[in-house]
Amino acid sequence: MSLTDPIGDLITRMRNAQHGRRTDCSAPWSRILQAICDLMKEKGYLESVVVEGEGSEKEIIVTFKTDRPALLLKRISTPGGRKYVGADGIRALLHGSSMAIISTSSGLLTHQDARAKNIGGEILCTVS
Image 1 (cartoon, rainbow, N blue to C red):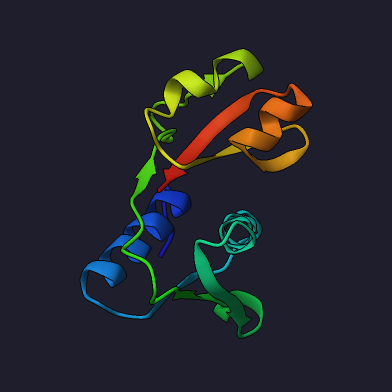
Image 2 (cartoon, rainbow, N blue to C red):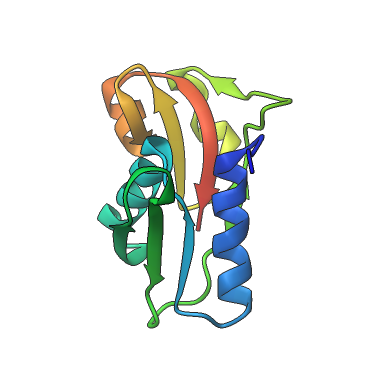
């Protein structure tokens, strides 16, 4: 089955798993999904990110932290409506969220890193 929006699918799987009080969830693997999950783990939002399987059967297994409330995940840029922002306009789109993940020419960055490097890009999602 092909997906139109794999990033939105990952976010929805994570949201649904947390609402169902599960400690982990799985999603089909891709480089961008793994990069998003690794960035969230690096910033302390996830307990672990594991890749299992080979070839087309690869999956990402995400384990949530149990000592914190459920993550608030929101998809900002969609396939039908991309949201691009310059380095000076990043703060205006956050609306109090803790972290935004931005796809830049230097790879995936958090909004703090993008501002520090003075780089804009496509805002993929926010995490609180």
